[in-house]
Length: 547
Ligand SMILES: O=P(O)(O)OC[C@H]1O[C@H](O)[C@H](O)[C@@H](O)[C@@H]1O
Image (cartoon, rainbow, N blue to C red; front, side, top):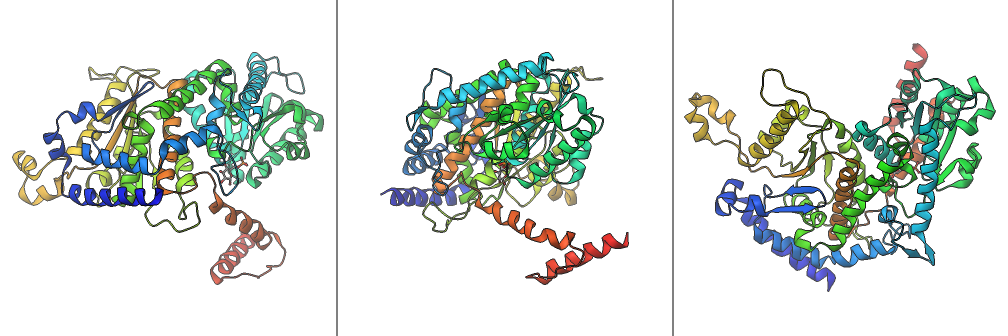
């Protein structure tokens, strides 16, 4: 029943796609001028204009039918209730439980996990209060002035992105830095200029077995103990993990460990103790506002009718472009420099979740699934890759994200507008030009010479969604992240894939370990399965010895 309903909805949408292929957003707006006001959504503090997408109201009805056929409501409820929807790892997917208010109980296997969540938040709050007030001292009695988060993937991208985004809310007395790459350049740069006596490391790893993180943590530990001695570790290292045993084996006292749970996926973990470095920077009160923002969007996702449900509408539009238009990528264009790391964060969220080619039952997926996400803050991207967005041969749906008020504004010299007003006018212009372009007639009318007209035509009809909020606050950032998390969920449901495992990253890790001897052994072990790897190793070995 479920499959056949999806197939029927899919067929209807295929027909719709053919019909719409010959239409232009200019016509769609001319036919339905109210769409600019009405194809919009309000979710928490976010105002979302999706009118400049390649859909009519009929298309939207068909997309809703697809969502209903995919049993979105039931699947969402199953996720929120702790069903083991991560079937290949037999795990619940409960990142939403990390942001429930204390009184909002959730019982899993007889355990009220909301209490567990708030117990850890309480410990994080006490610890970060001590750091921020200076009552937590280093081994030689000095105040901690730098926190270095060592983690990778979900244990880095979330806190690093959020820390940067909430820069203006951060305490000046505590500098927070991030190390992720096993490239020694990363740790070296992060430690540059730091005083061991005033530095605290947060080793963040869900599994506490990740090679990059443990390698960096071990080097950081040596850096510290060389100057302060072994006994300094207790005051200068804390861990964030689900794996108490490995934390202890590394030499961090579990008393200085902040736990979370296997039902929190790495890329969904910024609300857990993985956010410790963020809490250290912005304080527990602001962190609570951040979590409340997520919860607001969670509640919207759970309660808003489908047609007004922002993650549902946007998630279905993502399916529309990926699976029907074959759009392989989507651009994330924050018109906010503080969101510079948002595209990288969303890459992990979306691509590790939905970069899959088998369905839940192990059968191949027959349609294109997760798109490649990429992007840069506006207006920088305009001077780099927007040319392709406007006149290239590839369809790239774009999300433009902006804020009505900046944290700080500056008067622009020689213009009545402020710098922030200039920024926002660029956002508006891009959304308009992408959609409506400029015709040959319009260009000719400007007196352009005939042989240049074709080069100057702006085809338009390039879809974009504009997401606006009053200001980039902790709560708004939480809402924005949750908006994307739930879109990913919606897409995964429709495609019938498991959005919560990541088997595709495992083989590379074991192969890297297997190849280490090829670089470290005195004699080249020369036991390769392919001639390309053999030649690469040989080149590296000879180049290293000849330098
Ligand atoms: O937090 P950790 O266990 O160290 O994992 C860090 C990262 O590495 C893994 O390879 C996964 O692909 C990511 O989803 C995860 O966030």
